[in-house]
Image 1: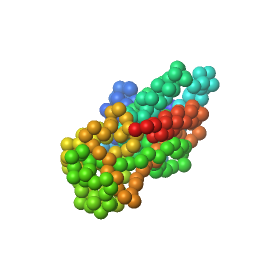
Image 2: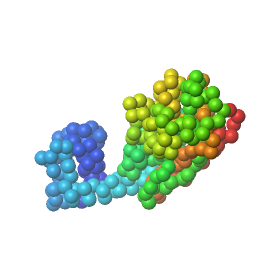
Image 3: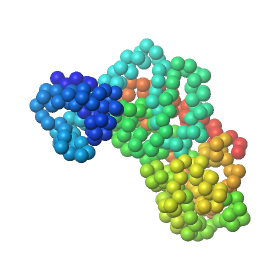
Image 4: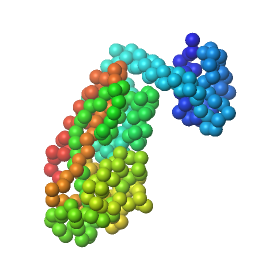
Length: 303
């Protein structure tokens, strides 16, 4: 029978499509990885990898076996986690993925509160693109996510947490700011800044621009909400920013102003996600509850 380690090498090849990078990802030498994959093919009696292609590709049967190998690896990790949890309870390290459009402005207070309640619990925070992190969650590289909805899949548990309002903001000296209320038509043709297109927030900004007939700028893509605020504050264009960011110490409204648009509002929904049936599901639920509580506290506080 194949060993779990050999299956991990196969998954690494599928993810990287390169022997060298796969060896680095698997923390093994390239000759060892290549040799073990040959042994795996011999044991199974099939060719798994098309070695002549560049980048490296899997054969059809190789892809099917890799899909099953991913599930086996995740299940093995869950078995180890379940055994650890039976001893340690709310403790240990949890690999936590979060969208950069939320994590820096919400998670510090959540982490501090969890640490006070559970001193042995560690959240290893990794910011990233939600779609990419969902794939990492599915293959076991992450344990839990905080990401915007919608999210699909029967293999993951989706725990809706809260909704936050989105606001169109402009530089304080922008002529639009001289109006106490604007009509949606006043935004027609206005330039709007956004993030890298890989972000869910970019797609939502694009939809809002279509709704308001605003002009989404492709030449000035920000790398963070901070960069959007700074560019908007310098007069490069309007921006759409979420409420928790505007209320945060890092965000704020020193150089920008929210625009009030009659009859228009927008919001986004955030959820915690973990693998269905994961060994630490109860712990993940505690963390999700803490995140929702903190978000609601901030949004109900005085501005």
